[in-house]
Length: 226
Image (tube, rainbow, N blue to C red; front, top):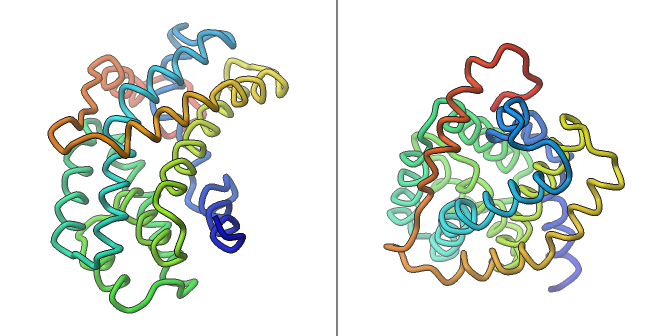
């Protein structure tokens, strides 16, 4: 990857990107509250299971397709995968999370003026913007290679999950970094899966996670918004 593309990818994957990713746990806080995740080993099990059974089989493949659609300036395909992703958010918190971060990133793309008129027109044509749609648009505008975008998205997701564990179990900082380091082969495998699945193989079926998300909506004490 060229240095400019690498720097753009690091910016898009950075936790300092002002879209509010740090304020969401994606059901993990509820799992910690119930004792399902309580130490480094159970945290790794949670993250790897979530990664391979949900993110690698649905969220990342949809991002992969949205990148391709933006590269071809195919508004109809962007609209289709945008609506598919929104429809797959099966709890109020998961839907609000993705729409809020997608709106924030979409607004940032516009304010930074990194996308050409055609890309911005496609982005703004969507009635609602989930995060993968805005991320795909930003990545295409900044000419970041699609495989790198997928891997960057996966790492950013895993890093946020690890940080939730560091703050909420709590794990030590060293344990958190050890956890992230151990995930390298898992993230590489997840990226390969995401880029190889056919449309009819996509799935985010995870009723246990959905229940945890719904329970989090009424959790008495919480730090995160999902």
